Image 1 (cartoon, helix red, strand yellow):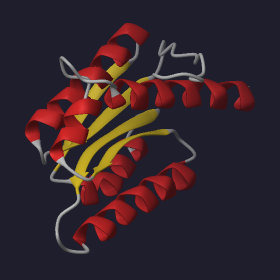
Image 2 (cartoon, rainbow, N blue to C red; image 1 turned 180 degrees about the vertical axis):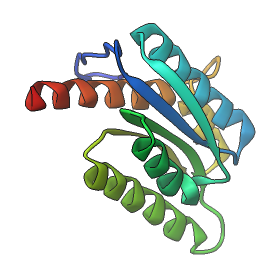
Image 3 (cartoon, rainbow, N blue to C red; image 1 turned 135 degrees about the horizontal axis):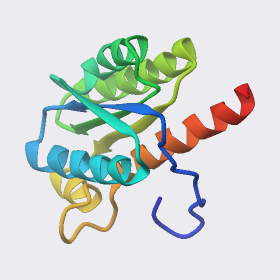
Image 4 (spheres, rainbow, N blue to C red; image 1 turned 90 degrees about the horizontal axis):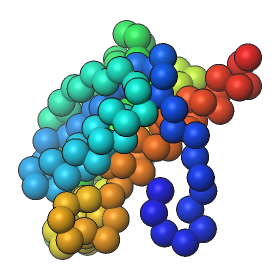
Length: 156
């Protein structure tokens, strides 16, 4: 994770299958998020499977299916950019609430890599692309791995 105060996380993915579920909107930003998540998961030693979701609204159902069909954790990636209608609030809330419910219902980690943005530039700044200030795809993968490790300890 980036920034001051970021925790040092256990990102050992040995023996884990981690699904990346990625929305397809805003291709350049989405590609950056996906590359960051892949990089972290590959370095961790996790087995990676990838699934495409049409958009962020569909991330919860695809994530739940991945977790119910063998994945130990999910990294959910999406991009939602505010427009001139309330659509932004509805999709952002549905994706956030849905992914939270998936994690709680399955008891498995969901790394949250859904960017909720005012404009495209904010996404480019957070997507882990050359010149980006942050790499939210990588951070979401780190969070999923660290949560999976914490659950392993708790569950023995």
